[in-house]
Image (tube, rainbow, N blue to C red; front, side):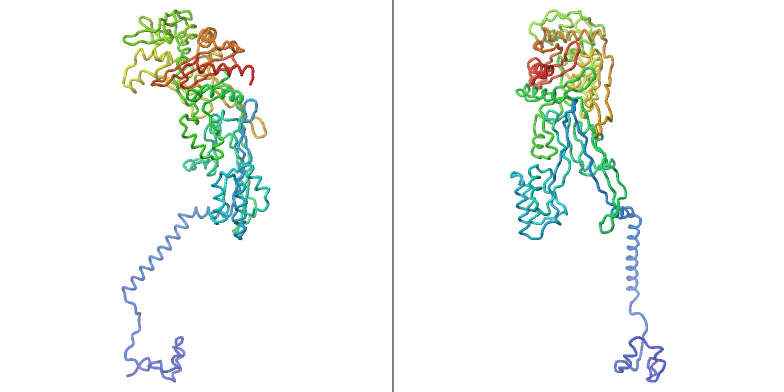
Length: 640
């Protein structure tokens, strides 16, 4: 049979048809068959396999196209930013926070050097014996009671737990530890990272006023990063630190440096200069603050240790002292003393609670001057109108007593204040028999004129508005009607009425200055880091004429009589004339009443208003008035 693939040895066209390697095999001879009965030329793959291969190839191509689209479209911004981040490095220097001074420029908050102990792992030696020496020498410089720092040193230096290139061992190390490390030149890999620490040097008496700093929390980060904060930055958490955060903070220095792919700096692209935070000059008298805290703590110690006191300049609303006891050391939040912080949080006396602004209490008889002013203004009484106090009044089956058994006899306005005669206020507040009193609506109206039932606007966070009860409130809340007895209670500062110590001090300032209600202010002015004035706060009048001068003076006479022959005769020993009102506020249950005294001095030309509250202090004359007397005696003699 003629084989079409048979090739003759003499076929000269073999070179034209030869395939690589074929001519060699042909030369060998025995491997090349000479004849074929059937030869099939074609693919060995069937149709199904080809289809599967095509689908697989299609999927691969689709995945590649999808990934390219994701990189170029969906994540293009992300990778652009990454590339930019690799090109530009931001170096940041934190601006010093502004300082805080009292009215006489005595510093109460300063910035002090802070050292954090860190380890640069790349600089540690490779010799284990040398690592143990470094660890032992460093541990010997750590205070004996700081086991956590010692353990951390062992973990990092000896055990080699390098989770980061630079590892913090302890923040804010002691001055002694810092000096020990600096004086030891043979501690390779040990870094003292210097920064600034906030220090509250004004004493614990100012703790609630100043507040403290705390790290930014994760849930706050989204909002704050838009304002230039970095995660972990410190911000004001309470008090003035929180209220004046933007004033105190300053502006960090940010240097934008171009770097190459190896991390080498090439050039400074731009630089935002550092601006230190502004300073606060307070109206607070730090010495008065300390003295008032000391005396109040001593008097409150036997009855639970809780109380508040507020001192104002009645002529302009400046806050001279703002005391809430118990106090606390706000430096524990800077040093992150977790044991001390936990102890504060567990203390049932609530030392972190600012009672001067956030504490609400029934005012007791200190509210009577407001009711008396309203009755004069409405023509219900004159200063000479008299009511007979026989020990109390009976209304239906209810008896409303005076505090004095047998009563006070015939009582006019001045005597009603001086001796705190309840019967007088039952009459002018709720009326009796044919006599028409003010009623709840008008009592509340005059209370609002004096600033009750609303915040004063003092420049501190956390102020509460207190509470003035109404007929509608009682119906909606208690499901009861308002009775005359409710008005009687309101007229003597009892029942559901609640006030804050700062509100009561503001009220007494109106009687001291002749009729003007001021907004209380703690910060007098703001200066920059060079001491130059940035802003000055001027007195702000809330109500320039709370009541007529005539009616104010009528009540003032009663406040003076309180000292001359009334419930605060112990104040006659003061080196200056004074006036005021005692208060004993029932709190219900088996708890002792709160003790109040609100007064001012000198009587003729007042320089200071002082309100004192001793929680569960039994009576104003017993607990609060002695605090007023001792502090005023010190204030006007400045004796220690």
